[in-house]
Amino acid sequence: MTARHHVVVLLFPGVTLLDVSGPAEVFAAANSAGADYAVRFVSPSGGDVETSVGARIATESLADLEGAPRIGTLLVAGGESLATRPVPDGVVTAVRAVADHSDRVASVCTGAFALAEAGLLDGRRATTHWRHAAELARRYPVVTVHPDELYVRDGAVFTSAGISSGIDLALSLVAVDHGRNLAHGVARELVVYMQRAGGQSQFSAALDWPAPSSAPLRELCADIVSDPADAPPVAELARRAHMSVRHLSRLFTAELGVSPGKFVEQVRVETAKSLLDRGHGVMDTARLSGFGTDETLRRAFVRHFGVTPSYYRGRFPTDPVREPYRSTTSNSSSDAPVATGLR
Image (cartoon, rainbow, N blue to C red):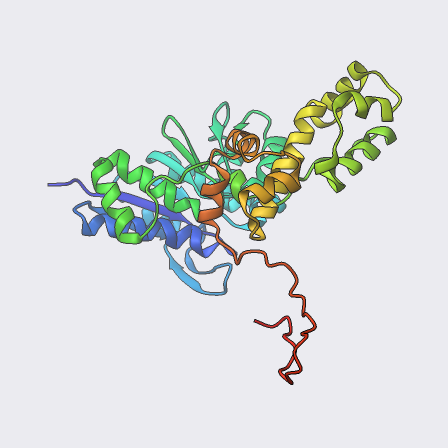
C-alpha cells in the first residue's frame, strides 16, 4: 500500500492562482493513478486568502499543523509581490517553521524569493521566473541562479520557473516518488508534456540588456538592435567606434558580459524568435534576422533556446504573415467590384 505523502502549499495574499492550482491538480491526478498525496493549503495566519485573480482559497494556519504527521513536501507558491517588494516577515517565518518539519521543500515561480529569504537556498542552485531571475541573483548573491531552467533540483530543494512550470515541477516530484511511468500517465491525463523541450528563454520577452555607460558602445548597440540583419563584422564595429578590436571586446565584456560577436548573435536570435512569433517562415526569418541560411539560424537557435526554429514555430503557432493585398485593375469591362484587403 502506498504511504501517504503530506503536501503543504504555502499561500499569502496576492498569490498567483495557477502556482497553487497547477501543482495541486497534478497531485490529485496522481492520486487517481494510485498515489496518495494529502494536500493542505496553509497561510501564516490562516483564513481565506485572496489570489491574484480575486478568487479566495480557504487556508489553515501554522497552528493547525502542530501535531500533524511529518510533512513530505513544502511547496511555496509565488506572487508578483515577492519579487518586487521585501518578502513579508510572516511568510519567511512560516517557510522556516514548516521547512523544519518537511522532507523536502519546493517553490513555484517567485516563491524562490521566499525560500532564499529564509536561507534555504544559500549555496544552492535555483531558478525562478525569467523576468525576475536577475533580481533573485542580485538580492541573494549566495544563490546560483539558472535563469533558463524550467525547474532545478539541488538535493532536497526544488525550484521552478514561471507560473505554469509549477506543473513541470510537480510532475518531477511525482516521478521521484512513484516513478516515471505513473508521472507519464498523469501528464497524459492533464494533456501536458511530461518534460518540455528547451528552457524558459524560449518564452521570454525581447532582449533586455543594461544600457552601456560609454557613448560609443551605446550607439553601436542601438545600431545593432535596430537592424541586426545589417550588423557588420566586429572589425567594422571597432572602426566605427574609433577603437581597436581588442578594446571594443573589453568594453563589451565589461559592460554587457559578452563579446561583440555574441551580442550580435543574441540580438539576431531574439529577432528571429520575434519574427517566428509573428508568423514568418524559417527561411524568411533567417534572411530577415541576419543569419542568412536556415542552417545557421538553426544552430544558433538551438544553442540559445534548446529547440529548433521549426519546433518552436510549431509549438507557438500564429497566423502566417500575409503580404499586403494589392488590388489590380482589370482589363475587363465587367462591373465586378475590385477586391479589397479583407479576407
